[in-house]
Amino acid sequence: MTGMLRATLALAMIAVPAIAKEAVISSKPIIIAHRGASGERPEHTLAAYQRAIDQGADFIEPDLVMTKDGQLVARHENDISGTTDVATRKEFADRKRKKRIDGVDYKGWFTEDFTLAELKTLRAKERLPLLRRGNSKFDGQYDVPTLREIITLAKEASAKTGRTIGIYPETKHPSYFASIGLPMEALLVAELKAAGWDRADAPVFIQSFEVNNLKALKQLTQVPLIQLMAAEGGPADKAQPSYEAMATPEGLKAIATYAAGIGPQKDMVVANDGTVTALVADAHAAGLKVHPWTFRAENYFLPSGLRRGINPAGHGDMAAEIARFLDAGVDGLFTDYPYLGVEARNRHSRRPAE
Image (cartoon, rainbow, N blue to C red; front, side):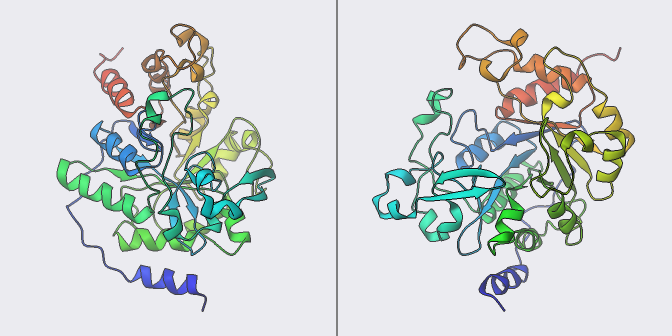
């Protein structure tokens, strides 16, 4: 038995007491804090997740990658060159590597080359400092959180606030990690079981851009699964030829055999010119929820008609953009600014029926 398998089995036996009885999540469209309140704090830090909770997010979203010793931690990518201070740490200078991951060449420092203890010595920094200068003042203050720490935060916040705060983890590069002997599916499910969240009605969604790892998870857990889709390209595991094909009525019916919903790039739902596609209607016809990504307030990310001023870092009318998607019938959305998402959702729900 490998050390990783022993750790996984041991984890599954850990009993995590329920902190509070979980309430039913609102039937309104859910607001998913994309990497936490990442517009206001360095992403994937406990501070970013806590701020998102304080702002009323229904779910906090950790991207999950593996450590050398088989632990799940939250980073946007396993390449941590741009999200931690690792490049300044002389003791890790010899860990810099060149790698090819999912067909893309990288050069940097990677989580799979560090133990959890080593990663915990690093400090997070803002990934987009030119657009989010205010976040840079928090550089060096926060460490790299584990999935278990994020679950604990969500449970404690649920008990404190009296509302359910869920988690919405994404498995990053699962086929790559499996190829180097660090599969993540069983470990993720074991963490959820330890938390008492391995149920169909648990406040959890698991998402992935790949297909085969979602199908594997389908055999391991009752937690609802979400198939992520981009406007271009296709799954890294080559299980389907393209996301475009997966977004057709027939493709959506196939997704419904293993997933509860889709997470499409937002342009696949409403084009930049405001044109609404058939994706939401087709997905709902297949019995799938629709949670598009990602809503950001900066002009740089907004359609031209919703920008305010010429500064790319300035904020435009993200609320108006969200309203278009709520009108289109989405069931939730990912945003870097949860408070704006909550305000837009609540404002939309108060509008008189036409």
